[in-house]
Image (tube, rainbow, N blue to C red; front, side, top):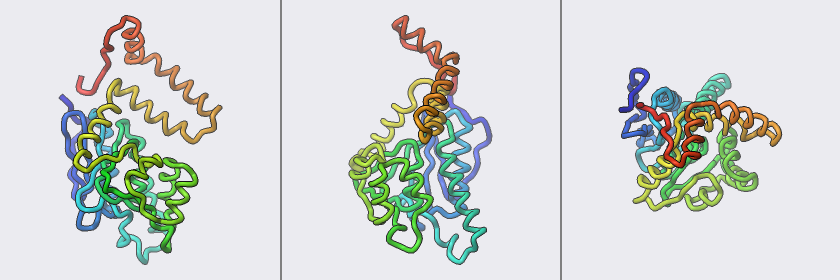
Length: 267
């Protein structure tokens, strides 16, 4: 039986649900195209932190309505001073960093258009599966305010030239192109979105929960290091984690030609 380490919170703009090994965090402001208002970003961050402190194995990020997320809510921004904007964008950055700091793999299940900070949200997730009718854009390039912070996440997912194309043109790319470019993992028929997302997250969460959590942390820690520093870091983490019960059990099971008995949440 899975359980929470602390009391569950109540949310107004997101839904947090649980089924078997997984939690699902759903953006639930369809009337506002799931625009990332200050309140919504704070609730998303709280929801990720709540699940991050539980022993659920993985997290789906989903949305309701005709748009996955239209990006920032300009009602929170128009006419605001510099101090306010810095504070708001810091909240956004904290959200993106929280997604990558929780121990569970996070999979964005994208059914429709994700633009600007909404595209950043998808790019910040560990994994992403999109319906064929979904689209992705960083539209600031064709407007009056460049997508500076979405640029950070997008340019860490796809190649330099393709990131520049998205950022400079602001054009929407379809889900098939997004998969080819590496912004998402899969482009699937809409009817198969739930099934294929569940299949990928199930595969991504098998094995040792502890090892996967450290592996996620290490992945983001080394990804932007130069190769010698990345190897030095990874060497130390791999050596240290070789001493954990799960690592030792996996080695012994392999040598003894049997299935390993790994520690899983709820045990």
